[in-house]
Image 1 (cartoon, rainbow, N blue to C red):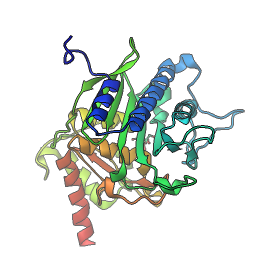
Image 2 (cartoon, rainbow, N blue to C red):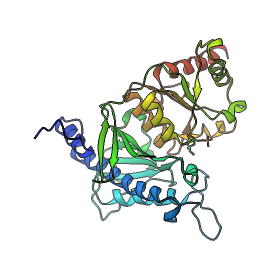
Image 3 (cartoon, rainbow, N blue to C red):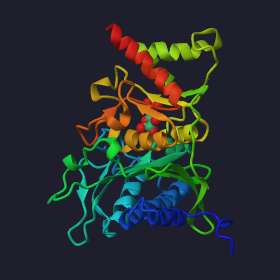
Image 4 (cartoon, protein in one colour):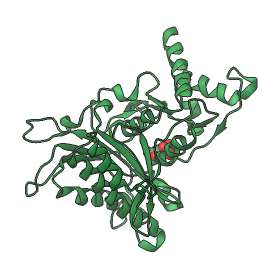
Length: 346
Ligand code: P6P
């Protein structure tokens, strides 16, 4: 038998990482449990209109509104429940936090408590579900501080550098799990015939240069001046100061946009604008920006708030929002320079 010929499953990858001492058995179990929950979510998402799971959550015509003030989709609620149930009894977690829940949830007393904290956006981009555009699950794993009797939101407030694992599952033409445990970023594709995630890219690498940017241009008039200048120069193309033409892509599903960037490069930005600035930005730090930043840095890219390395941000709230620039290292650094030069003149 030629062990190097057979495809590497997620299970085999994690066992090999454990054998190398890079993760312990409980973190390996946690990642397997999250991956299994993502398979269940993939099945539900894949049913579309046939599954009775499209449309807004809530009953009697009353929309269900989450802590973000956003109308929940039925699949948001279902995906959240799938992740909660999958992780309750395994003994690997101390508590969970979700975009869909106001506060963290401790593991029920009847189950053994583990030493990890799991954060997730159960179904990011869910506004795209009803129009059949790719959506995804984003997750981040932290260690639970030791000697904590009752886990609270405050125990989750750790910088992105404290993450021990992060990943997303994108529910697109294929279902893919992209994962880092701090030893590179790797992609696994769901083989539906055997029901396993199979490694399809070991060591994703983001090209340092790019000609592709992702931003919601309809917000342009609301952006800060350095962002206006930065994007204006991108749009000026080779006749402008950047000296090359750029292309634009915007799926409005972070997982889909970030997966494209991890696959072929680019820069993704959801900057401050006068609409979201009062909240600190649009995207959430703990379960969107930080896990994506970990994945991107592990693939040779960069991730910033525009003024600070994303993974260094000291969190102040479980649902804290931040401006986001991530992707091809040299392009993110260019965007940061526009902000630094602006701030230096202020
Ligand atoms: P806009 C989806 O709601 C999301 O949180 C991200 O997945 C996505 O990148 C962004 O918001 C899209 O925002 O303002 O373009 O709808």
